[in-house]
Image 1 (cartoon, rainbow, N blue to C red):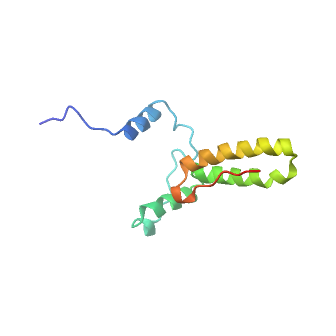
Image 2: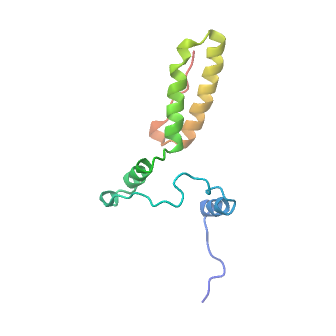
Image 3: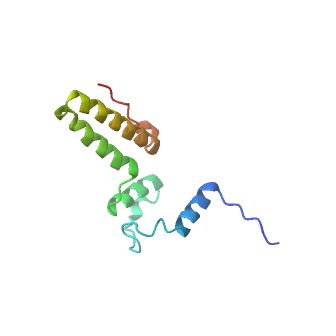
Length: 112
């Protein structure tokens, strides 16, 4: 009995289309073996983060967090008008960060 109607979930379709469109072609480390540590196979989450770290890949939310922190540090050097604009920019970045990070690590918007 053949299965002519294979089930694929929505995310699999998105990934397949991205591969087809070449969106993964320019990723750093493409074609290089991943550094894996057998000690983490009992905890897939730890393995994922360790693999990312060992291969110098930061999740998007960590990059965004670093950008937000750097932007906040520079606020004290700005005048009132520039500071208000920068706060709006930071809050946009915080919103993007909150969509990407684990729920327990979400940040609050900042105010003047």
